[in-house]
Image 1 (cartoon, protein in one colour):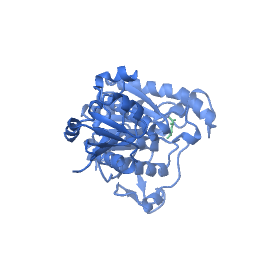
Image 2 (cartoon, protein in one colour; image 1 turned 30 degrees about the horizontal axis):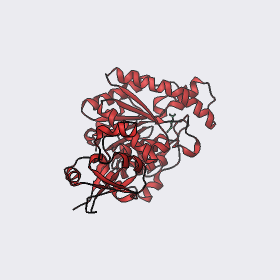
Image 3 (cartoon, protein in one colour; image 1 turned 120 degrees about the vertical axis):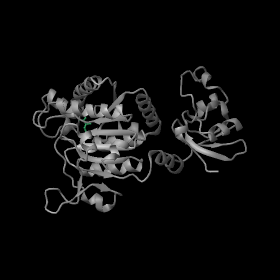
Image 4 (cartoon, protein in one colour; image 1 turned 135 degrees about the vertical axis):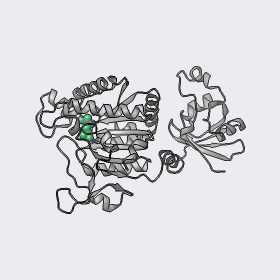
Length: 372
Ligand code: GLU
């Protein structure tokens, strides 16, 4: 199990506020952060793609604004996040750059991960950053997220990010070393090193307790495990208290791993082909059919007809000239724009639409071919 982290390709690490800031003073734990970034840099040097989801904006901002201890009003926590996020991003930037790594800040709201059009934008920006070698540092956009439209906890946000970017591993670093069969202070409580499947019994083991700084208790961690594993990522709950917590996991520190039933690619393909309703159809010529069968993306040039009304990010059906279904995919353009660019070369898109969109009508990662 200690090799799970080492073998992962794309890893999301979630850091709880209780680790990053001192619970008494609210001050940033600088030595801890530096050691964590050292772990991240080492993993990146090994060829792994790393993303960080970090909490701590509210607790840093609360200190700067001298807000009282205890529960904050929504607008106070939004104000605290606005102040604290600057310091948080700066601390990551400083540490990552000391290892020669570019740091990218991404603030997401619930809608960015739930609404398909925005989801595709966030996904492709993150993919581009990873390709360019940057480490995205992600948090919820607390300053604009109101109670109805927010995650509120970064456990579930991190899990959505993991499935959004098809990560194969998510590590939740917090102040607990995993899941126990009963509250850990009770006699007979046993630690579970591995959870094969999230059953109702597993869910029942999660109590409610959360510290004052981290919102997510074990319940949200199990909810996160459900989201992440369904997206094809294996997830760990680990104690991040010591320095270099990722190295500690690799060296066998106690934690709980949740197994994923499939890979991120298979999970994404299932989502596209199975759970999304197709809202339109595009017909393509024989050359395009050949290209798709060779694993390439669908370019506007190969489109002969566009049927139905759909938005960017919607699932659409792809048919050949005889009406046979070739597959399904997520459209990079809405039906109106698709009708304008159909049959044209990707170089002409900007001139035709007045903006430079994507070169592909359906990117190959967003396409699932029908089995012959
Ligand atoms: N987004 C919040 C912050 O940065 C943290 C939420 C959480 O603790 O999970 O302060």
